Length: 293
Image 1 (spheres, rainbow, N blue to C red):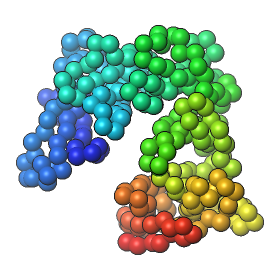
Image 2 (cartoon, one colour):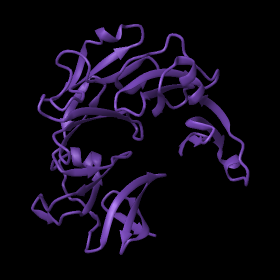
Image 3 (cartoon, one colour):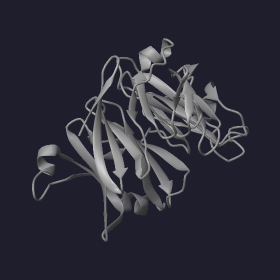
Image 4 (cartoon, rainbow, N blue to C red):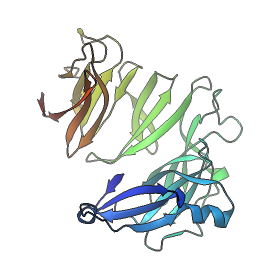
């Protein structure tokens, strides 16, 4: 289930729709005992028409746009084909993009493509090594503007576009191995700043806030934080060189943090305490974060 604007979206699967119905409804309708859903795409019907083993891997949409970038995979494989879909006409666009790549939407006519196909494009692990800029109307094979690339012996590269802040940001991830990565901040023109943080962290940037979970004991600006500690700071302050991280959560035996997410500017911590689910809310302020349940 996901929410965009006034609508909730999900991919409904049952015995009659094993590949799924991609559909949406309003929040008021969802609260009813029997909700009415608007079916946008019947994936089983599409697969039958095109004689392909299609499954929906992911969807991406620009705020305020009716066009969606559908990532379809054959039988659930990692490789995807990107198709442009119009939610108003409920149809695939005839002139839409079709390629075997991952992409981030810059605007209605521009993508950042991460591809493992082509000479020199893949890492030794077989994943994408290069991020390129593509504009509508250009042949995919000629998307020659390279904005970020990594060494062939790293696992792979990815990027995402962050629109939660006042300005659009692009995050580039250089995945070194399964647990370690370098994070860069930039624009669609390329990476500008490499974050001065350990490689084995887990972060979830949102608006001007940077919460960081440390997988191992780490010393930052003379302060030693235990393994699995969650710390946070203003991104603006961090980029200005400040390292006074408030502590949001300290792990202890049989109390772990398997996940977190943002909701209306507040960080929700999904905690397992003695295997019991507990949710804590951290609200960020200029110099501190307040905790509540």
